[in-house]
Image 1 (cartoon, helix red, strand yellow):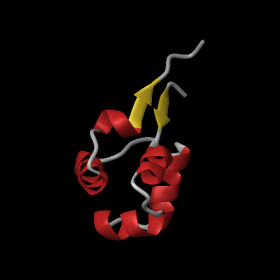
Image 2 (cartoon, rainbow, N blue to C red):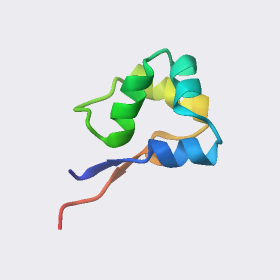
Image 3 (cartoon, one colour):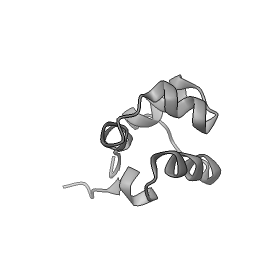
Image 4 (cartoon, one colour):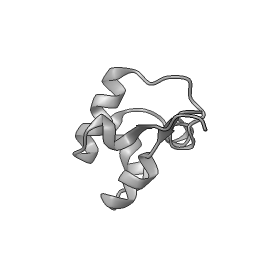
Length: 69
């Protein structure tokens, strides 16, 4: 899949656990896990906004486009 989710990298940089992020963002820890693994088909902009606010980052820090070889 050409879209790579770097949420785990940002969590590590901010020294934050998935559980803490899920509480701040207001979604389940399971949904954070699915997002981290890239097993979601989409993410709502308001959820992305809350994640970026919690991690003090830009959407491009979390989502990356890597074209298929």
